[in-house]
Length: 135
Image 1 (spheres, helix red, strand yellow):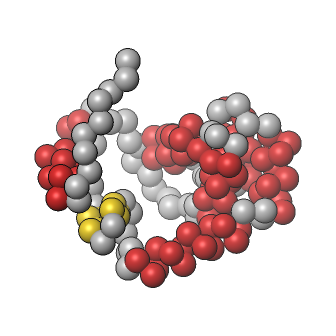
Image 2: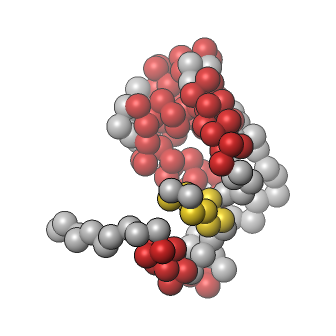
């Protein structure tokens, strides 16, 4: 499907543990760089087939989005955001989330990649109003 949409994805032959990436992402979010870091990790893992379980790789990705690498290394080494990620995982379990992506609005859940029409219908059913785009 990615190929048909023109999305660059590599043919990964290995799966790497993303736990440290999740912890560093929580820190990046607290620094206002969450979206940029998530995008960089996604590209590194799915497009460039990099090992996002490696500390040096994560620190480099943090630096690539303007976060201080020395602080990023400290966050990874001390596991400073471990509890925050544990809380996210517990919340996911309580909500019955078993796959990624899962969209949750109120009591409504939708799991898996969906065509845009299905996402729009989901948002409409959940009462989400369309926002005007700012230029």
